[in-house]
Image (tube, rainbow, N blue to C red; front, top):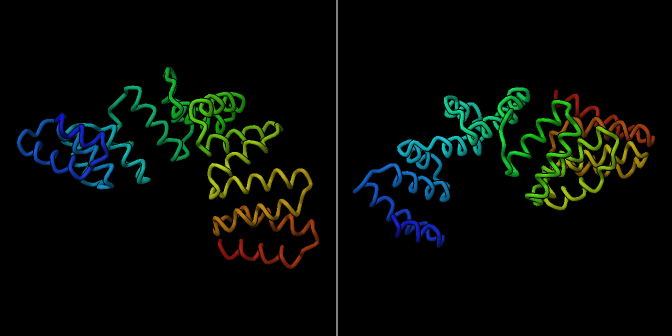
Length: 246
């Protein structure tokens, strides 16, 4: 096992995998299967990793793989009988992804945790459930702990916008961290539109549409801006695109 862990820590996953498979054949312990699962997961062999984690009875890692693949209900089923802190945080994340915010909020009640993931989930759920000031505070803590996550700045910006606070810096930071985040460009467009900067708003809605061609709301907002700018043909074209997508 020590040799496998050395290969694994050095990033030599091929050698680690070969050795782990040998060890599992000789001694199929939970520890050996768990290490095999970690190696397979890092190699992108998700199905094989799930099988190894099943034999190791590591349901947390199985759930994490399902979450990463968007298989939220499968992840929830795996965790349904577990009530430890990590399981509850993951279940809250799943409920967030399923837009079941009240269930997610319930999972986090009474949990004392200091991880950025915990504060991120709690902050986003609080935003969606109307606890806007709490959301700003929790997302700010998450940003302090992990300042490289564009979503944290994006959701803090949304919370600030809801309260009429200045959110432009957060949106700009989110764009810098993830220049392919269509919703951030859309929100910047809303900000500019509300400030009467219609040409700039249209540009940001266009950027959002370029990144996400099915972004119906962006077409609708851009059409509204085009009408204000007297660009009726462009506005009608956007409205037609929205109707075609229905």
